[in-house]
Image 1 (cartoon, rainbow, N blue to C red):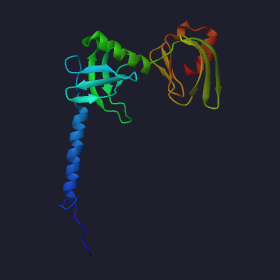
Image 2 (image 1 turned 90 degrees about the vertical axis):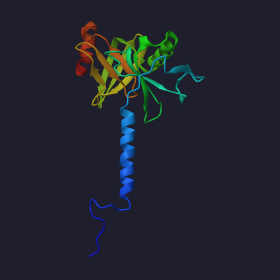
Image 3 (image 1 turned 90 degrees about the horizontal axis):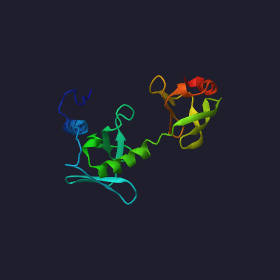
Image 4 (image 1 turned 180 degrees about the horizontal axis):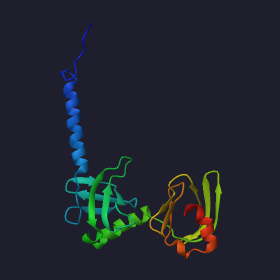
Length: 194
């Protein structure tokens, strides 16, 4: 009966497995390394397309994403700068927006405002629940709006006892800062989500 390579034996493919493990460990170490960015080591600039680029020593990223790590509890601290692709990689973190120049801060805040655009719901006109979806007809601080949420998903998140964040099926976010300020009729419409 022919014998194949035994477990633990040094077959021709063994070295390749070691190399892959080494490579994987190196990539993991790179991913876990936290690099803080500020005016002393990073230069942010606007691109012609309205995005932001960053240069860190010899590294240049023609376009970056600007993401809050703690968008609700600490929106001015720990701002992650990432590559914009599908498998975005963290380039670095701005520990505090107060540590960067006013010009850079303004540029990054513009990007954050686009990413975290969250109209405030000021009035609920109607909510219709049908076939696993809820159809909202509301007035926001940005005007009248209609949107749909998936009732079975995690579309409604309680940020506190009174504060609610609602995400529609297109991933747009809406906020109700204080449900106690809604009328009895509005609370009854919203009752399914409270």
